[in-house]
Structure formats: structure tokens, C-alpha cells
Image 1 (cartoon, rainbow, N blue to C red):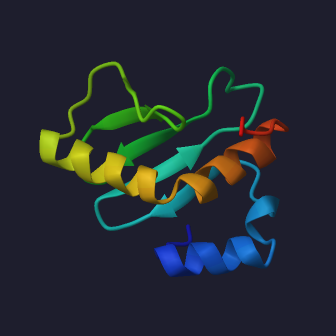
Image 2: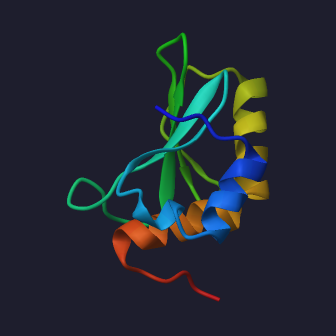
Length: 107
């Protein structure tokens, strides 16, 4: 599994390679990974799944509202860090979600 830094992810997106990823891990660091799943498994509002490395924590975050779905075992500090990262990388994550779901975000 390839690990991407933010700058590498942006470079990949700019060169059109990211659009070839059908589902799975989009961003990964030493603490967690962000996944987007393609249909038919996924439906509903645009969101990502964040999965912890080393513990059994998982988090679902809606991209447009940054709302957290359900309970999580992530610490409050980790949730804040994750939501901040998702907010800062909204365009990249939404573009990937749209590529997998064939939908365009509202402007």
C-alpha cells in the first residue's frame, strides 16, 4: 500500500493518476488512513472513512459539513486533527469521492 504525503497527493491529482484509484486508501500517515469506497458499497452524502493504525478506532466524516457520524474510539485531540486535515484537503477528497461516485459537488 502506497503512503502519500499531502504534496505528493496534490501532484498525483494534478497529473490525473488519482482518478484511476477505484476505491480504498486515499491518504495515509503514521497514525491513520482515509478511505473512500465506491458503489455499490457506498451511497448517500459525500463522506470519508478514517481508520486508525494500531488501535480499533474508526470515524466517518461527511465532507460538506465535517459532521462526525456515530461514536468513535479516536481521542478528542485526534478527531480535531483529522477534521482539520479533511477541511484543509476538502477539494482533493471531494474530487476523489466524485470520481468514484460519478457525482459533482454543489457550488
